[in-house]
Image (cartoon, rainbow, N blue to C red; front, side, top):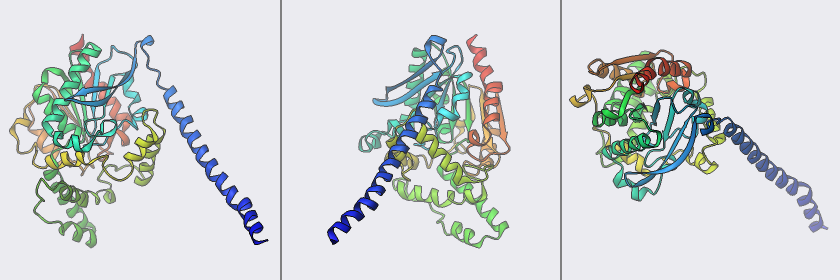
Length: 382
C-alpha cells in the first residue's frame, strides 16, 4: 500500500514538475530561437541590393580570427571597429547597437586574438599576446579589407583598449587610415587606475564615506610585478569596483546599472551572431581565457603620457569622451589630447555619459560619426 502511495505521489507531483521544467526549457529555447530569427531577418544587407553581410575566419598573424563585414551600400566608407577589454567583444550586441552605422559605413567587426569567437587555446595564445602582435594583426586585417572591398583606406573606431590598439596602428601605418576615432580613450593601466583612485578618494572624502575611503587607502602604493598578472588585475578591480557607486564607470546616465547589465545579457542571448554557449562564456564572470589578462598586465607600463611618440600623428584625430568617465579618466585624456599634433583634431564631449557613450548617448554618437568623421573619408574616396 505504501509503495502504491509513493508511486501515486510520483505520478501526481514529480511527473508534473518534470513536465513543467522540460516544458519551460523547451519554451525558453523556442523563444530564444524565435527572437534570433527575428533579428536575423532584420539583416537586410545583401549583394543584390549593393550591400554586404559576410562572416568568416581570417588568418591574422598565423591564427584564425573571426571577422564580420556588413553594410547597406558598398559605396560607403569602411569603418573598422576595435573592441575594448582586452577581450570584451561586441559581436553579441552589435546587431542592435551597430546597425544604424551600417547605413553610413561598411562596418567591419573583429573578435581580436584571444577573445570571443577568436578565443582559441590559451596555452598556444599566451606567448603571442603582445601589444606589437595585436597591432600587426590589425594592420594585416586592414590589408585584407583593402583587397576584399577594393578600398585604399579605412576609418578606425576604437573603444577603450581598442583606442590603445588603434593608436599603435595609425602610428605604424597612417597611409591606411582616413581618420581615427577614440571612444573612451585609454592611457594604460597604471596611470589610468592611479588617476581613478585619486578621483574616487577625493569624491568619497567630500561625501564622508569612511568605509570607501579606508578601502581605497588600503591599496598598496607599489604595483605588483608585471609578471604577476592576476595580482595586477585584482588591483585594477579593487579600484574600479567603486566607480559604479558614483556613476563614473561604465555608465552614468542610466537609472539602474544592474538593469542595463541584464539588457546586455539579453542582447547576447538573442543575438543572431552568437550561440548560447558563447553567451554563457561571456557572462560567467571570468575572462574567456587567461591570455587576455596576460595582455592587460603587459600594458601596465604602456602610457601615452610619458611617450613623446604618441603626441604626433599624420591622420585626422577625433576623441569621443564621456564627461563622467573615471574608468579611462577624462582628466588624463584632455591633458594628453591638448598636446596632440595632427592634420585635424576634434575633442567631442559627451555630457551625459561615462565610459560607454554608445550606450548612453547613441544618437549623438551616430550623428557625430556621420557629420564630422565620415566627410574625411568621403573627401579622399572621390
